[in-house]
Length: 310
Image (cartoon, rainbow, N blue to C red; front, top):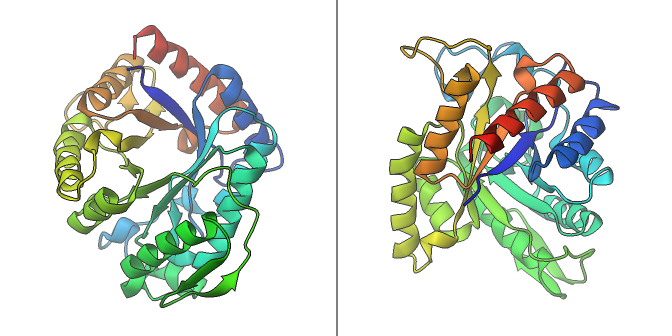
Protein backbone atom coordinates (compact mmCIF):
# COMPACT_ATOMS: atom_id res chain seq x y z
CA UNK A 1 0.00 0.00 0.00
CA UNK A 2 1.39 3.41 -0.98
CA UNK A 3 2.00 5.67 2.01
CA UNK A 4 -0.40 8.62 1.91
CA UNK A 5 1.26 12.00 2.45
CA UNK A 6 -0.15 15.08 4.14
CA UNK A 7 1.32 18.55 4.49
CA UNK A 8 1.12 20.91 7.46
CA UNK A 9 -0.18 24.33 6.43
CA UNK A 10 1.79 27.45 7.42
CA UNK A 11 0.35 28.96 10.61
CA UNK A 12 3.36 30.16 12.58
CA UNK A 13 4.38 33.81 13.06
CA UNK A 14 6.79 34.05 10.11
CA UNK A 15 4.04 33.30 7.58
CA UNK A 16 1.59 35.71 5.98
CA UNK A 17 -1.91 34.20 6.35
CA UNK A 18 -3.18 36.38 3.49
CA UNK A 19 -0.83 34.73 1.02
CA UNK A 20 1.08 31.71 2.32
CA UNK A 21 -1.84 29.51 3.38
CA UNK A 22 -3.52 29.71 0.00
CA UNK A 23 -0.25 29.34 -1.94
CA UNK A 24 0.90 26.31 0.03
CA UNK A 25 -2.50 24.60 -0.08
CA UNK A 26 -2.77 25.08 -3.84
CA UNK A 27 0.78 23.85 -4.36
CA UNK A 28 0.23 20.81 -2.11
CA UNK A 29 -2.64 19.69 -4.33
CA UNK A 30 -0.61 20.24 -7.50
CA UNK A 31 2.39 18.33 -6.10
CA UNK A 32 0.20 15.34 -5.27
CA UNK A 33 -0.23 15.49 -1.51
CA UNK A 34 -3.29 13.66 -0.23
CA UNK A 35 -4.19 16.11 2.54
CA UNK A 36 -3.40 19.42 4.22
CA UNK A 37 -3.59 20.02 7.95
CA UNK A 38 -3.93 22.72 10.60
CA UNK A 39 -3.04 22.59 14.29
CA UNK A 40 -4.23 24.56 17.30
CA UNK A 41 -2.12 26.72 19.59
CA UNK A 42 -3.97 29.71 21.02
CA UNK A 43 -1.43 31.51 23.21
CA UNK A 44 2.04 31.45 24.75
CA UNK A 45 1.88 32.59 28.39
CA UNK A 46 4.57 34.85 29.80
CA UNK A 47 4.52 32.81 33.00
CA UNK A 48 3.14 29.36 32.12
CA UNK A 49 1.36 27.23 34.66
CA UNK A 50 3.35 24.27 33.34
CA UNK A 51 6.12 23.50 30.91
CA UNK A 52 5.72 22.57 27.26
CA UNK A 53 3.52 19.45 26.88
CA UNK A 54 3.12 19.50 30.66
CA UNK A 55 6.80 18.71 31.24
CA UNK A 56 8.03 20.63 34.32
CA UNK A 57 10.52 23.34 33.39
CA UNK A 58 10.31 22.73 29.64
CA UNK A 59 10.17 26.17 27.93
CA UNK A 60 7.55 26.98 25.31
CA UNK A 61 9.12 27.66 21.87
CA UNK A 62 8.86 31.06 20.23
CA UNK A 63 7.40 29.53 17.06
CA UNK A 64 4.14 28.86 18.96
CA UNK A 65 3.51 32.60 19.28
CA UNK A 66 0.67 34.03 17.19
CA UNK A 67 -0.36 30.83 15.41
CA UNK A 68 -3.22 31.29 12.95
CA UNK A 69 -6.56 29.73 13.86
CA UNK A 70 -6.82 26.20 12.42
CA UNK A 71 -10.43 26.41 11.22
CA UNK A 72 -9.81 29.71 9.43
CA UNK A 73 -6.65 28.22 7.94
CA UNK A 74 -8.51 25.14 6.67
CA UNK A 75 -11.27 27.34 5.26
CA UNK A 76 -8.70 29.32 3.26
CA UNK A 77 -7.23 26.05 2.00
CA UNK A 78 -10.66 24.68 1.08
CA UNK A 79 -11.37 27.74 -1.08
CA UNK A 80 -8.39 27.16 -3.38
CA UNK A 81 -8.36 23.35 -3.62
CA UNK A 82 -10.64 20.66 -5.01
CA UNK A 83 -9.16 17.31 -4.01
CA UNK A 84 -6.96 17.30 -0.90
CA UNK A 85 -8.58 16.31 2.39
CA UNK A 86 -8.68 18.99 5.11
CA UNK A 87 -7.58 17.75 8.51
CA UNK A 88 -6.99 19.13 11.98
CA UNK A 89 -4.12 17.71 13.99
CA UNK A 90 -5.42 18.61 16.37
CA UNK A 91 -8.31 20.78 17.55
CA UNK A 92 -8.24 20.93 21.37
CA UNK A 93 -11.78 19.92 22.27
CA UNK A 94 -11.92 21.68 25.63
CA UNK A 95 -11.26 25.08 24.05
CA UNK A 96 -14.54 24.89 22.10
CA UNK A 97 -18.19 24.66 23.06
CA UNK A 98 -19.37 21.38 21.51
CA UNK A 99 -22.42 22.61 19.58
CA UNK A 100 -20.76 25.52 17.71
CA UNK A 101 -17.71 23.40 16.88
CA UNK A 102 -19.89 20.59 15.49
CA UNK A 103 -21.70 23.12 13.27
CA UNK A 104 -18.46 24.72 12.04
CA UNK A 105 -17.04 21.35 11.05
CA UNK A 106 -20.29 20.40 9.31
CA UNK A 107 -20.35 23.68 7.39
CA UNK A 108 -16.71 23.33 6.30
CA UNK A 109 -17.37 19.77 5.16
CA UNK A 110 -20.44 20.80 3.16
CA UNK A 111 -18.58 23.75 1.61
CA UNK A 112 -15.56 21.62 0.66
CA UNK A 113 -17.52 18.74 -0.83
CA UNK A 114 -16.92 16.23 1.95
CA UNK A 115 -13.18 16.65 2.53
CA UNK A 116 -12.96 17.33 6.28
CA UNK A 117 -11.22 15.06 8.80
CA UNK A 118 -11.96 16.13 12.38
CA UNK A 119 -8.80 15.53 14.38
CA UNK A 120 -9.47 16.11 18.07
CA UNK A 121 -7.57 15.86 21.33
CA UNK A 122 -7.75 16.98 24.94
CA UNK A 123 -4.62 19.16 24.85
CA UNK A 124 -2.16 19.72 27.67
CA UNK A 125 -2.11 23.47 28.47
CA UNK A 126 -3.96 24.68 31.55
CA UNK A 127 -3.29 28.26 30.40
CA UNK A 128 -5.24 27.69 27.18
CA UNK A 129 -8.12 26.11 29.08
CA UNK A 130 -8.31 29.07 31.46
CA UNK A 131 -8.28 31.57 28.60
CA UNK A 132 -10.99 29.74 26.64
CA UNK A 133 -13.29 29.51 29.65
CA UNK A 134 -15.29 26.62 28.19
CA UNK A 135 -14.54 23.84 30.65
CA UNK A 136 -12.18 23.01 33.46
CA UNK A 137 -8.90 21.34 32.59
CA UNK A 138 -9.72 18.45 34.92
CA UNK A 139 -12.87 17.72 32.88
CA UNK A 140 -11.16 17.61 29.49
CA UNK A 141 -11.70 13.88 28.88
CA UNK A 142 -15.38 13.99 29.77
CA UNK A 143 -15.86 17.08 27.62
CA UNK A 144 -14.27 15.36 24.61
CA UNK A 145 -16.66 12.44 25.04
CA UNK A 146 -19.59 14.86 25.05
CA UNK A 147 -18.25 16.66 21.99
CA UNK A 148 -18.19 13.35 20.11
CA UNK A 149 -21.81 12.73 21.12
CA UNK A 150 -22.86 16.22 20.04
CA UNK A 151 -21.09 15.87 16.69
CA UNK A 152 -22.87 12.58 16.02
CA UNK A 153 -26.20 14.22 16.80
CA UNK A 154 -25.63 17.43 14.84
CA UNK A 155 -24.25 15.61 11.80
CA UNK A 156 -27.18 13.18 11.83
CA UNK A 157 -30.79 13.61 10.73
CA UNK A 158 -33.15 16.25 12.05
CA UNK A 159 -34.63 16.75 14.51
CA UNK A 160 -31.43 17.00 16.55
CA UNK A 161 -31.80 16.60 20.30
CA UNK A 162 -29.17 16.17 23.00
CA UNK A 163 -28.82 16.72 26.72
CA UNK A 164 -25.44 16.50 28.43
CA UNK A 165 -23.29 18.24 31.00
CA UNK A 166 -22.22 21.14 28.78
CA UNK A 167 -24.78 20.98 25.98
CA UNK A 168 -28.56 20.97 25.76
CA UNK A 169 -30.26 20.93 22.37
CA UNK A 170 -34.03 20.86 22.35
CA UNK A 171 -35.41 19.06 19.29
CA UNK A 172 -34.44 21.29 16.38
CA UNK A 173 -33.40 21.47 12.76
CA UNK A 174 -29.65 22.05 12.52
CA UNK A 175 -27.82 22.63 9.27
CA UNK A 176 -26.07 22.59 6.97
CA UNK A 177 -25.36 18.89 7.22
CA UNK A 178 -21.96 17.51 6.27
CA UNK A 179 -21.71 15.63 3.01
CA UNK A 180 -21.31 12.50 5.14
CA UNK A 181 -20.62 11.93 8.85
CA UNK A 182 -17.24 13.61 9.23
CA UNK A 183 -14.50 11.06 10.02
CA UNK A 184 -13.21 11.60 13.57
CA UNK A 185 -9.55 11.03 14.37
CA UNK A 186 -8.32 11.22 17.97
CA UNK A 187 -4.89 12.00 19.37
CA UNK A 188 -3.12 10.74 22.47
CA UNK A 189 -1.10 7.68 23.39
CA UNK A 190 -1.82 6.98 27.06
CA UNK A 191 -4.12 4.18 28.14
CA UNK A 192 -7.33 6.19 28.36
CA UNK A 193 -6.69 7.98 25.08
CA UNK A 194 -6.05 4.73 23.21
CA UNK A 195 -9.20 3.20 24.70
CA UNK A 196 -11.22 6.19 23.44
CA UNK A 197 -9.73 5.80 19.97
CA UNK A 198 -10.55 2.10 20.03
CA UNK A 199 -14.16 2.74 21.07
CA UNK A 200 -15.10 5.85 19.17
CA UNK A 201 -12.73 6.98 16.43
CA UNK A 202 -12.27 6.38 12.72
CA UNK A 203 -8.54 6.95 13.07
CA UNK A 204 -5.62 7.68 15.38
CA UNK A 205 -3.32 10.73 15.28
CA UNK A 206 0.00 9.87 16.94
CA UNK A 207 2.68 12.55 16.89
CA UNK A 208 6.44 12.55 16.34
CA UNK A 209 7.00 8.82 16.89
CA UNK A 210 9.56 6.55 15.28
CA UNK A 211 8.48 3.27 13.82
CA UNK A 212 9.96 1.51 16.84
CA UNK A 213 7.85 3.66 19.16
CA UNK A 214 4.73 3.43 17.01
CA UNK A 215 4.55 -0.35 16.63
CA UNK A 216 3.82 -1.35 20.26
CA UNK A 217 1.28 1.45 20.73
CA UNK A 218 -0.49 0.43 17.56
CA UNK A 219 -0.53 -3.14 18.81
CA UNK A 220 -2.22 -2.00 22.02
CA UNK A 221 -4.73 0.06 20.05
CA UNK A 222 -5.65 -2.82 17.77
CA UNK A 223 -6.08 -5.17 20.72
CA UNK A 224 -8.35 -2.62 22.40
CA UNK A 225 -10.41 -2.21 19.22
CA UNK A 226 -10.95 -5.95 19.04
CA UNK A 227 -12.04 -6.03 22.69
CA UNK A 228 -14.70 -3.48 21.77
CA UNK A 229 -15.90 -5.63 18.89
CA UNK A 230 -14.38 -3.51 16.15
CA UNK A 231 -12.30 -4.48 13.14
CA UNK A 232 -8.86 -3.15 14.04
CA UNK A 233 -7.91 -3.07 10.37
CA UNK A 234 -10.48 -0.35 9.73
CA UNK A 235 -8.73 2.15 12.05
CA UNK A 236 -6.70 4.65 10.05
CA UNK A 237 -3.33 5.88 11.38
CA UNK A 238 -2.01 9.36 10.47
CA UNK A 239 1.38 10.14 12.00
CA UNK A 240 2.45 13.78 12.34
CA UNK A 241 6.20 14.42 12.10
CA UNK A 242 8.29 17.58 12.16
CA UNK A 243 10.77 17.59 9.26
CA UNK A 244 14.19 19.24 9.57
CA UNK A 245 16.39 18.51 6.57
CA UNK A 246 19.92 19.72 7.23
CA UNK A 247 21.16 18.35 3.90
CA UNK A 248 23.98 16.47 5.63
CA UNK A 249 23.85 13.26 7.69
CA UNK A 250 23.72 13.68 11.45
CA UNK A 251 25.31 11.30 13.96
CA UNK A 252 22.78 8.62 14.86
CA UNK A 253 23.49 9.03 18.58
CA UNK A 254 21.17 11.73 19.86
CA UNK A 255 19.68 12.48 16.43
CA UNK A 256 16.04 13.49 16.59
CA UNK A 257 13.86 11.42 14.28
CA UNK A 258 12.98 12.95 10.90
CA UNK A 259 16.04 15.22 10.94
CA UNK A 260 19.31 15.14 9.05
CA UNK A 261 19.98 14.05 5.49
CA UNK A 262 17.36 13.00 2.98
CA UNK A 263 18.52 9.42 3.36
CA UNK A 264 18.06 9.52 7.14
CA UNK A 265 14.60 11.06 6.89
CA UNK A 266 13.55 8.56 4.22
CA UNK A 267 14.70 5.71 6.46
CA UNK A 268 12.65 7.13 9.34
CA UNK A 269 9.57 7.38 7.11
CA UNK A 270 10.03 3.82 5.86
CA UNK A 271 10.22 2.64 9.47
CA UNK A 272 6.97 4.43 10.31
CA UNK A 273 5.24 2.90 7.30
CA UNK A 274 6.49 -0.57 8.22
CA UNK A 275 5.17 -0.07 11.77
CA UNK A 276 1.66 0.65 10.52
CA UNK A 277 1.35 4.34 9.65
CA UNK A 278 -0.96 4.67 6.66
CA UNK A 279 -0.40 8.39 6.21
CA UNK A 280 2.37 10.71 7.36
CA UNK A 281 1.70 14.39 7.91
CA UNK A 282 4.92 16.21 6.99
CA UNK A 283 5.34 19.48 8.89
CA UNK A 284 8.13 21.71 7.55
CA UNK A 285 6.95 25.04 8.88
CA UNK A 286 9.24 25.46 11.92
CA UNK A 287 12.36 25.50 9.75
CA UNK A 288 11.13 27.55 6.78
CA UNK A 289 11.06 31.32 6.34
CA UNK A 290 8.04 31.68 4.08
CA UNK A 291 5.51 29.76 2.05
CA UNK A 292 7.74 29.47 -1.02
CA UNK A 293 10.54 27.82 0.92
CA UNK A 294 8.04 25.48 2.56
CA UNK A 295 6.55 24.56 -0.82
CA UNK A 296 9.96 23.95 -2.40
CA UNK A 297 11.09 21.68 0.42
CA UNK A 298 7.80 19.81 0.44
CA UNK A 299 7.92 19.22 -3.32
CA UNK A 300 11.51 17.97 -3.15
CA UNK A 301 10.85 15.51 -0.31
CA UNK A 302 7.59 14.35 -1.88
CA UNK A 303 9.46 13.41 -5.04
CA UNK A 304 12.15 11.58 -3.09
CA UNK A 305 9.57 9.65 -1.05
CA UNK A 306 7.77 8.47 -4.17
CA UNK A 307 11.05 7.64 -5.92
CA UNK A 308 11.98 5.48 -2.92
CA UNK A 309 8.81 3.47 -3.43
CA UNK A 310 7.04 4.60 -0.28
